[in-house]
Length: 192
Image 1 (cartoon, rainbow, N blue to C red):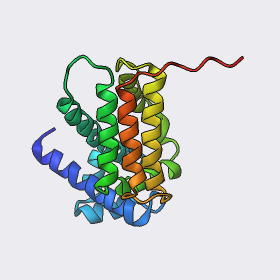
Image 2: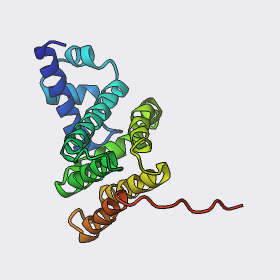
Image 3: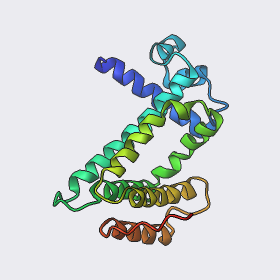
């Protein structure tokens, strides 16, 4: 993709995100996004053929931002062979997203997934890749999954407004979850 094309695509995605945040996924139209991005509808459809493609592009942008954040934090984790490096980076990325207020901008993504349920299955593999990285993090896989799910729950509580982003319990919970990444726990016995 040429730099001009990449800039145009980024401009459209930023306009779509702003429109989504102000009006919601159900009200978002290609015409509105084209007008906000100051491009023709043909210019927009050159990059995104439909509203669903545009929403998928937004989803990909948010996912790529989070993956980049996780990878940056992973590079800061000591590579001393201890288990849980990726899980700790995942936790820190979620906590940063909450504390910086970025999580609140993700509210529109959550609303988009509710309004356009066909999008989630199209990107399920993307999410599964993160969980695969958790499973191969040298922690018991269920422990890593439980830790990440608890962190995701904090993010969701902030997104839907059940909890304030500055609530101290979020940091305390993440500190506890981080400690669990350093101490593998035995699995509970299976119930019969």
